[in-house]
Image 1 (cartoon, helix red, strand yellow):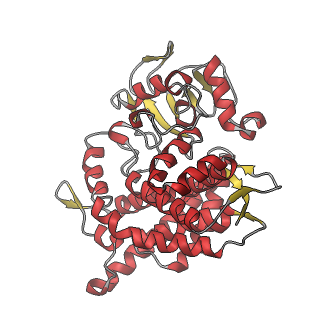
Image 2 (cartoon, one colour):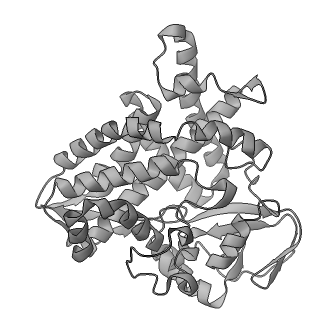
Image 3 (spheres, helix red, strand yellow):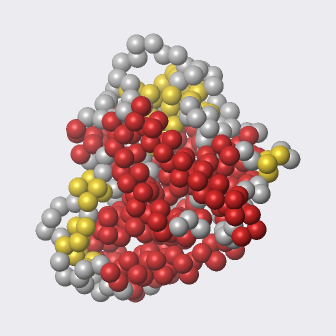
Length: 383
């Protein structure tokens, strides 16, 4: 472990929190592998991040203190549990879910007030993430509000690094899932035919998955869904309102929406960072990092690296998709990427089809703070 390593920056300073993207751009230029007490070693350049992602033996994902299926695992455990995970994100399942996504998006957009500033984060982004998640897993509508409150509490405790509260919040969330699993077991053959019930039959290494493993897998899907998808919806809506020419391009040709979403979210990452830990001494970007050190992969910086993307704020649909690290890369690429792409494509399709204009409001949006991204509030005017 590195002892008494001086800090190159403070990720929680007011200057960073006020505009995370701009702060990472500045830091990448002067200190591409930066140390802080809060995040350990932050890797900001695209090439260095790719190196970390392509070498899971040296940069381990087994960072969390609690079981995290499958993201917080390395092979061979990761391989076995990822095999189970990926059965739930097949093209057939995504096609089957699309009508529900579209109905949820259409209803929410139709309910938005026209002609006056409306905060799209609670009215659209958060509710869309919640309702699609419940539809995907077969969870009851009564869970919407408890999960919404839970997400807000979790975000606040994580920002404050209030570990006792974070632990209590985690136990509360696990309780939701255990109750859902118990209800399905008790119902037996009368249990709803949904993905949560189907998970009860999953096996790893010729044994049933334990409740701890099932809860962890569902927690991984849900926590990522509720925070990252809502952030993505806000970022996309803000960008379209701020860039009328892009908005019109997608209104004229909706077939471009999927690629446009990936490009907009490259510029403004919905997920700021992920953690790794070194298994041996290694040099990254000219910086020697000891074994057992925390390494933070800063997606929000790597996807804006001028060495790869030129002007990172230039919207272009002809970039090489392989360079975009929006959903990660390598064996730990985002487990729910097919669902996320479906949700965001459908949401933007319905938002543009059911409005004639998205415009900024006179009220400035409030940016989200680490570990969140995007916007805490997003007043826009819809016509």
